[in-house]
Figure (cartoon, rainbow over the protein chains, first blue to last red):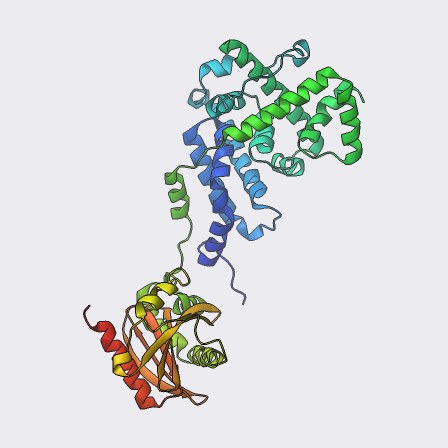
Length: 186
Length: 252
């Protein structure tokens, strides 16, 4: 009888550690941007890794990072659903000012304004976190996680064309927010 | 190409996702459209700023620990392969498991295989120019030479006064692992002392065997495996081993 890899199989656990743990920071980063809350991100990543381990037997590639992200995204969706039913528990770590900042300036109106400032990491994080879903997710997968359009499409379970239009929208929104931030700082 | 098309496709251009034909079309549109050109320039500035600012997060150590703790832990009793690995290079196999198992697991074909590899290494060393990588009768030259070349520092002991002349050291391969060889001479006979790490810290008394006409004295002490190989007689090789062991235990 063939030996079946069970959940307490140390060899499976060893392979899983080697394959999946190098992406822990990436997974945590994605969870932070999706959930905008450190504690929720930690819980989501832990749940993601436990689910990934349970399904590791069926993992056939191609790449570990998008595979983990697809699982993590589903975990985060469940968290969104939970927040929707209990709105008071939805705690954002994004400052209120960022939430209230105008997100969508029509770029056409200000073609003569050129983006000048190179914001620090905290400002960029805040601006990105303020993007609306599903644009934020697409943007983070592309710009921070360096996934290809195909991989983003697989993670988000949408066609590549949708990825392209969401990304175009996300960048346009961020550009406007970026310019608005510059105006504010002047 | 219209601006509406270019507005979407210029992102694919930035991301290197566009085929050459479309890339040319977008580029020619941008060349004649200041608005799209400004957008492209801003998006590139943003991408660069984001990449350089480092806007990722580092997972808290506690999260890593929680995930680690939730996964099945490595087996306490190592399998046969793990024991072999530990035998050759001293991986973190627990001493508890290894002391009992090394003897059992390695008693049969593995001990024979490793001993025959040790003899092969000895034979290779006797070919012209293969005997030593570092030539020195000074133990303080030979010992530092091994540092950085092996994950174990073989003891190098000058036994000239006892009739065994230290002539140098060499890096060799046994069981597909790098292993240290300390080379001695007794009259015109070469003695190779192979030293590798073992997971067991228990002292195992010496055994002398004869393979292909060579005598091998094998023992373990303080986490190291020793094989002394030579064509000198069993009595002389036993004498060498005993003098080495008593010298290593001598203070200072």
